[in-house]
Length: 473
Ligand code: TYD
Ligand code: MG
Image 1: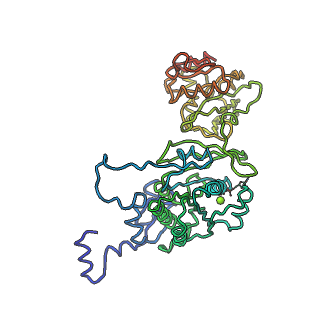
Image 2: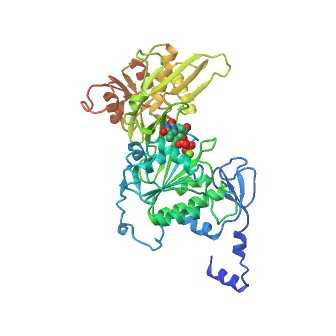
Image 3: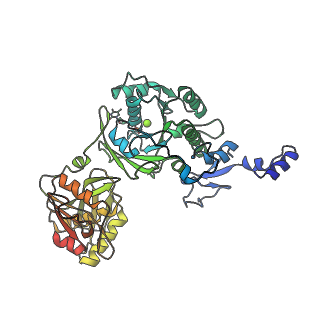
């Protein structure tokens, strides 16, 4: 506050107008975390309806100081960029290879990692497994706000780690937890889950937006000040965002999402934000009787196909993060009885599929306007990159014409609106991965064709136009 104002209000006998304004009720959007001085049916920031909830004014600690919570304490002096010493950013491998991969190589001291996912997907299992494995070398602490200690112990027994000396704490009050942590000085701390945490400083109920925000802010500050690696478990709302305000995602260093196909035993962890590593990196686990096991050769599990080639299937090489991954794209094209034929995409962007079908019609004269089109990526992977375009079209066409794509072919490439095939990043890596799994022919964007002799054992066909790709078929 400006010095003049502060003096004026002191002279006025403690009646501080700025304080007064601060303690007034405010409203927060549960979807984007935006703040508003009065209630409205629609959030002005994100346009969502009925998401504003009332929260009491926050105490000074969360007003001014919490905005610094994401930063590093004690660095208020100016310093030229080239004189800032870089922390070597020591990484501690966790032993769970796939978790190390999504984290960008291991645990980073002082980092705050948010792990989100549907209920029952395995968040608590993964983190308990992690702590049991590293506790001997990295003193750790597990805080549960949802389960009793005996439930946690039962799970540990199931994981074959029942006799570990890992300190457990069943508490939901942040100050009490931080007291214990100050005493114990763990290197790694898990908070399961952030939505159950509450702080003394606020009156609102646990689970409310302001409680989640403020609790997280305190834990972040603790992590930065002490260099403790903190994992926060976050629940996911129906819409798939981490429950509570989106600000949670801004406050932390890494946001990991657990994904899975219904009923599948494979679990994918995706890094959607990572200040210390590649984003969109994918870690793959299998849920077994004794916890989560890293899957080291994921292409093999996503490619369990019929022994005979069938129409409506094409294999593509997608690149999630830094690793190429072979996945099967399936399509079913069938006569529609609806005036508005259906377009259903699972594991892909539905809008993109509609667009691709339009390109196929306009530039190759193949009309599917009277057909229902279903497209699915097998194995519960979500493909977010455009390299899948060509495989989607080939699978759809193969189903439409009832002619299988040969079993040992692989395709990838982006399809542009004028029917051109555009290159995608990491072409050579993808082709190499396909060759490694015994594929004999790759249909790829011409610009992605590797130098002669760069990849052995696979014939690479480079195409420039969609029509050329169809000819190659
Ligand atoms: P849990 O880790 O409690 O999920 P979350 O914390 O994300 O809600 O859920 C684990 C699920 O996995 C539960 O349905 C039981 C199952 N499971 C196994 O199949 N094997 C195991 O070894 C363990 C511990 C759990
Ligand atoms: Mg849990």
